[in-house]
View 1 (cartoon, rainbow, N blue to C red):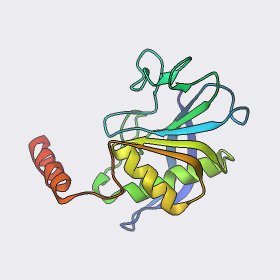
View 2: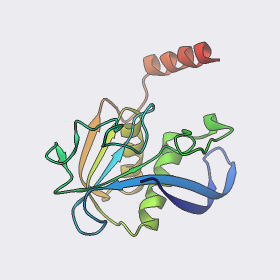
View 3: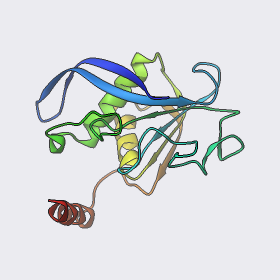
View 4: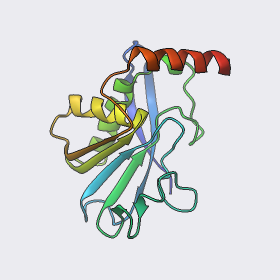
Length: 168
């Protein structure tokens, strides 16, 4: 079930200020506060649905799976503006992985979460996770980056520019 937190004021790193910024997320597994918490950051083409019939990581997150919902509570935020929740950001290029990391840390604070058992991030979600740990170094006991790095290489940056050109 999609839930929403409202961040009263958020200033992106490029200086754009947003009032009442919506941050949507899903929680699966045991009720918050009753089991070790795993935050999963989705990849660029993912969303907050990590499990279930349409879950993009349903083979990894579920009952009896690698991230077992009998043992762990899983939270996944939507990358703000990805449209999964109906919210788009007009100037999406002004948002960085660090901006998303700041939003996710604010989201955790809003939920009263001070510590994660594990922080898992794939691709762009992994980049956001790296940034989260720069902001809050003691946030997670375990960090599992998947298909990601702490920085973008020139090759990756050039591939992104080519993809953007093709999409436009």
